[in-house]
Image 1 (cartoon, helix red, strand yellow):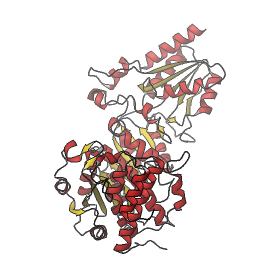
Image 2 (cartoon, one colour; image 1 turned 135 degrees about the vertical axis):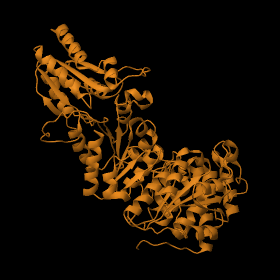
Image 3 (tube, rainbow over the protein chains, first blue to last red; image 1 turned 180 degrees about the vertical axis):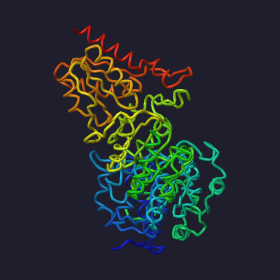
Image 4 (tube, rainbow over the protein chains, first blue to last red; image 1 turned 30 degrees about the vertical axis):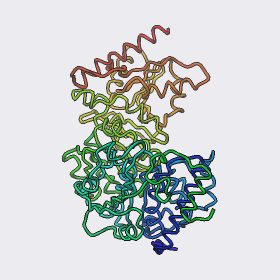
Length: 280
Length: 310
């Protein structure tokens, strides 16, 4: 299959997102690993990108013309790993090695040379987006027409390198770079608008010279439309400030920051799957 | 040296369309010729070095050969984590150039000194660390760096440094030291722009009847272990000289090699800067005198150590 967007339809995208949520919750319980809230807030964005918009070919993960997706908020790796497996970059059975001694799946993404589908080994915040800017500039030099999508968290917007990068992307008018902010209103230990003065976040991106839109980060139709519109003709880099809910999809996890580090018990996994409509 | 760097990177930019130059808002007019031939491959990234290093790494992961250039502290300590994670962890072929290294900018104060760069950068897996003694080594090393498929850090001087290699070395390989002079009694091992002091020290030692070998260890990592073994087999005393702190640089690297050897080895002297910031103003020549990085002091200490050993 050549480089092509999958363009899965909305009902299937939404069903897949529910299944991914169930997998992520099961994995957190099974491997006793955290960051559940952060993973659940970005699942819809990942599913929209990988199963609708990105022009990629899992058989050729290093194709120089592929679109790049960078999980700059590397602590969402437990959401990315099953997405890449289902998209076909590696067998789903490999996911059983998550967190195991000698395995590849740590709590943050490994390097591209160690796992197909990964574009940058993130985990230290404020690195992925600037690397993505470098990739987008490379594409311009090489006269290729791939897009780069970098998913950052609101907490990650604390990092100075995000704003250094925003300035250079704007001065260079890198219109094939799109940053999606997973704006779930929390960071590790508090409300993101209280820890540092992030508000008004969309206005900040606008003021930095970015073509900026706000969207519901769980509205699959909106995500698909926006991600498919890169570049958007403005001649500017594009920022999507995606309003999300930490722990989205499970009533007792939603907007409760305890789930940044808390691990679900077996009965909580069962209750979550019931809510998601995913068979046990 | 920086003019030679600009000239060589311009040539390389013409020869290889993968070469990209990123500058941290320095080198006004220095890169005009590069820009003439390759405007689309020159980026003034502003005074934002962390981003610059990540951008370069992203370019390298996309098949380009970025060269990052600014004053040494800002391209090393300022963005060390970006070097560690984005360049080294990804083993991305980024060439990092620190200009005005060591005490080149002594009179600008310690914010602009770099006396720890070799130490910290050689701790990073997969990183090559290179300190040319003159523009000949610089040009050869830059060419070799762009042929590598991993990251390289290069510390260079400012301008007006003398040429050491009157004729180009017959072979140049990163990781292989160059013998500048043969000798049987003592060996002076040095890296970087302090080399003229080292050669003058060797002259003084020869006058005093000490046959003195001189080695340009332009590559601090990987360290040329074969050459070290040969040196230690051949002489009674080894002195390591660098315009860098005594902690962890070339001297530190050689000391680490030394403790891993089984046989007893000749004595080693280390010349470098002590564990302190330089709080007073001074030229590079003043700073070298203050820290004992002069031909006179090197020759005196080597002579003294040889006499005590005799």
